Length: 168
Image (tube, rainbow, N blue to C red; front, side, top):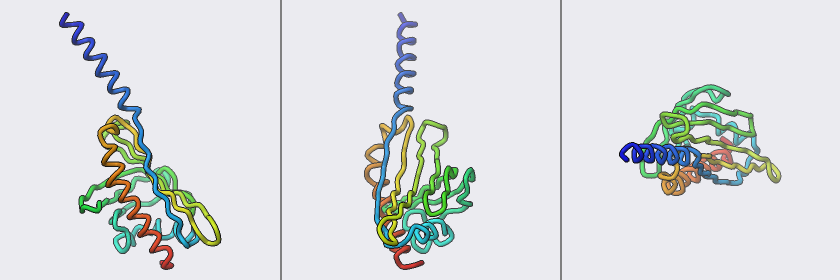
C-alpha cells in the first residue's frame, strides 16, 4: 500500500511538472512613433545612451549580435532592480531585436523578449514590444506579468518614442 501511494505521488508530480513546463504567457505593447524605423533602431541599439533616456533598462552591456550574451539592469516603476543575462536571438537592423533569457534552468521560466519595427504611414514606425514567457513558473507569475511587467513595457515604449521623435 505504501509503495502504491509513493508511486501515485511520483506519477502526479511528473504529470504536474510536465503540465507546468508547457505553460506560456504572452505580453505585448505597441506604439506608433513619428520617426522612420532606421532612427528608432539607432535609438534602440545605442545602449550606451540608455541611462540618459531609458527608465526601465537603465544599463545594457554587450554587443547586440546574434548568439552573443548581454547583461542589463532592469528597474521597475517601484525601483526594484533585476539583472538579466540573455542571449541575442535576432538583430535585424531597423526591423527586429530579440533575445532569450532564462531563470536558472531551461523551461523553468524563459522569456523571449522582442522589439519589432514596422514602417507605417509616411516616416512612421509601429513598435511592437513584448515577451513570450514559458515554463513551469508561469502559472504562479501571471498577475505579476500582466501588471508591473506590462507597465514597464509601456514606460520603455513611451521613452523610446520621445527620444526617437526628438531626433536623438
